[in-house]
Length: 91
Image 1 (tube, one colour):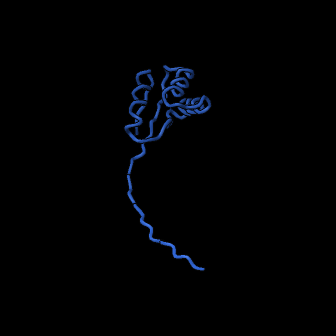
Image 2 (cartoon, rainbow, N blue to C red):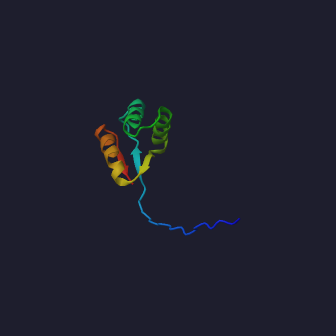
Image 3 (cartoon, rainbow, N blue to C red):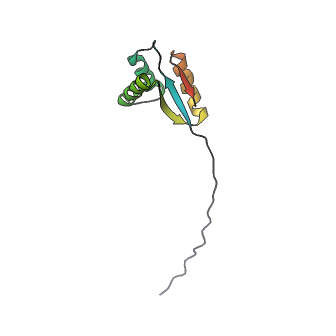
């Protein structure tokens, strides 16, 4: 016994292009490790280990990309980090 199956499939293709940006935090001689770690946990929602690793990279390499995403989603994080006296840019 054979059954006829309707195999017409309509595929909708919509491509939405978004530009992924990086929120980069820079090293300075003013802020403490604890302050930067706390800021990354509170502002970027990092786990303690992730915030500590980023802070070490910032210290030893001079900068670290702490978050990736669309520009609009990173602006408020960048503003809050800068408000806390830490240098950050969206690149």
